[in-house]
Length: 476
Image (cartoon, rainbow, N blue to C red; front, side, top):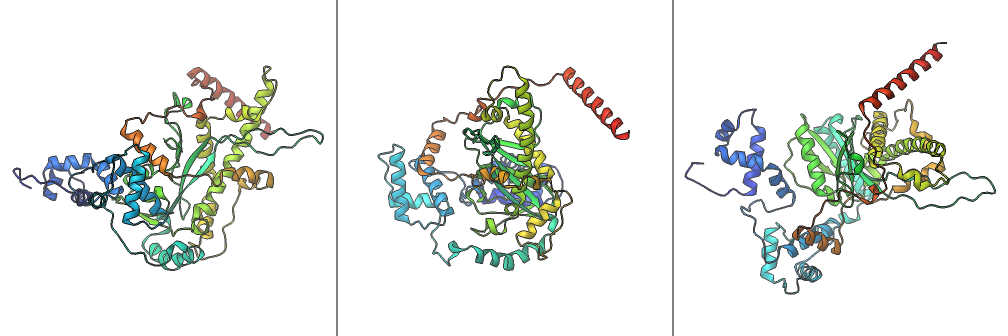
């Protein structure tokens, strides 16, 4: 490209440049620009805006578009696009007249009374949003056991022929009521157990592991970007992000994928379900994204064959130990007259929960993970590997099963209603996206002052003496 020649690059051109740049050996930007036949300034600009370019591709923007053009009412068009994506992910059939009518309904809800969805506007909107009309084929919407069996017999063999088991990963989200306590209790025969409102403060956890048992660092999504209990904390044991609903979104999933892709030094395949949040289009170098068939999560997805349940079992086990400590502490406090379940749950903040979750994740053995891939049908041999020491079995009795499953069906990804779509678009347009720094679950938290160096040294001295004392007793 000569200095006097200036042409606009399409989204596809930019993606192609990024793809070719990634394939080049390590070199400076000047040499890379020469190899790519573009100016260094253009290459630098594309690399600087790489994340935005990949996000545009994610949003299914037309890759031949050179400049983003807006229609006569951008807010209505964006609301219609979100509604369209939502219903198509449910495999609903939508026609042109239906989309035009829905556009006018959404406009009315947003106070745009003069908006008219004309045929010309609809044609331009389809072109801008890269939407085409197709005839429906087959009966994929009815897939279940049949679809799972077909995929394992026909699709899975070609995948495992390209990747070794250590490079095959599965990722899935689960919701967790991180403060919830057991709803059952033992009482004296003539006593009555008083009911209390269960704490429903939630987080979403993204679990990811390989066929051989390698575990990726957890991603946790909360409601508050900077909870008060994070004050003074230099590092977290997991990756943490937040939004208003503590849900997985396409944006969060994309950022997670891009970061992991840049960290990898080998090619892997990632198996995920086809929920709305996973429906992304990214130019990844090292990660091949493969979607499992619809309605087969409970049948073949490894994370749902026991990995997530084991994680929660270990988490509740740590919660149980913490509750015992809190009960003892509250009895020792003279000002405590009545012991209430909610008093206990409020003392467990999200920072402590993140540490519990991370410890629970570390406790899951590679044998458990391999067995879960086997349960899903990814390994032909029927014989399971035997666990050496599975402490999660300590929570398998009936009184704890309900506790582990209390958040089993908790929603983990975005599924907007029409009102939520309109509200969300209006908030963005009006620049009314205030950060939710203090979520409801943190209103009752007691801010714990970071320990001083003196307090840390004193605590270490106590631990040291305790270790020496117990070691001495053991030797005797």
